Image (cartoon, rainbow, N blue to C red):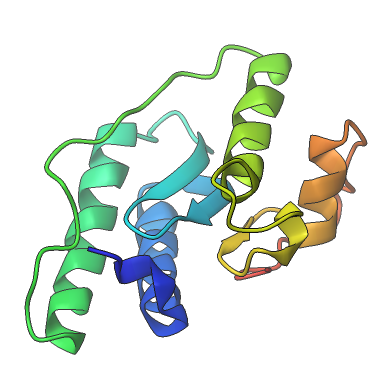
Length: 147
């Protein structure tokens, strides 16, 4: 299934991921929608943040609204993969992996040319600067849905 090649589907699913992130107290640092899966780097913003609860809710919300809009169909696999980020260097590696995924897959020559990549913490330029080792401005509000 190649659900994430349609901008409307990506927008719908991203909105539901954001909804779940807000409800479960997570911030989406980086995302990349590949044709049949999604990469996310998220950070809990409180002691009550629960990654499994966030992932479950994000899948429930987005799966429900996807099925409603597209006449049924399963959006997600039962299981995903998660990794615990140990420090800033590990975070940078994870974010770089997500940002460079469409380049590594041969979909684009430069990450900034991929339409389904971004951050809800930073603008796309700030995200790319972070991947290059520059410190993005953290005093700026996140730009939801930046591409």
